[in-house]
Amino acid sequence: MVNDVVNNMTKLVNELKESIKQDITDIKAGKNEALLERNDHKHDLINEIASLKSDLNRELISEMKEGVDVNIYRDQVDALEDDLKELYELNKKLASIVLPIKQMYSDLVDEITVVNGGQIFDVKA
Image (cartoon, rainbow, N blue to C red; front, side):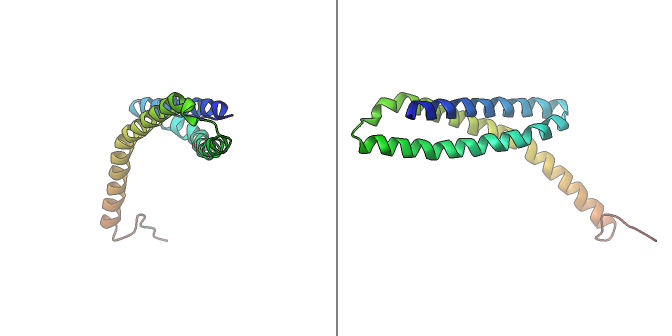
C-alpha cells in the first residue's frame, strides 16, 4: 500500500510541476486565460497530494506497528521528497514572476484612487 500511495503522490506532484511550468510559459507569452483555466485543477491536485500525505503517514505507521522495517521505502520517499523540493522551487519561480505583476497593478489602482480623491471611479449622476 505504501508503494501505491508514493506512486500516486509522485504522479500528482509531477503533474502539478508540469502545470506550473506551463503557467510560467503562458505568463511570459501573455496567455492569462490559460492560467485561469488551470487554477481549479491545480487546486484539486494540491488537495489530493495533501490527502495522500496523510495516507502515507498512516500506512507507514501501520507497517511499523506490524514490525515492517519501513527503511525499505527510503529510496522511494527520498525521490518523492526531491520531487516536492523541485515543486517548491518551481512555485517560487512562478511567484517571483506573478507577485511583481500583482504589485504593479495594485500600485496603479492606488495611483488612480489618489487622483480621484479616494475613489476608483468618479461617478456623477
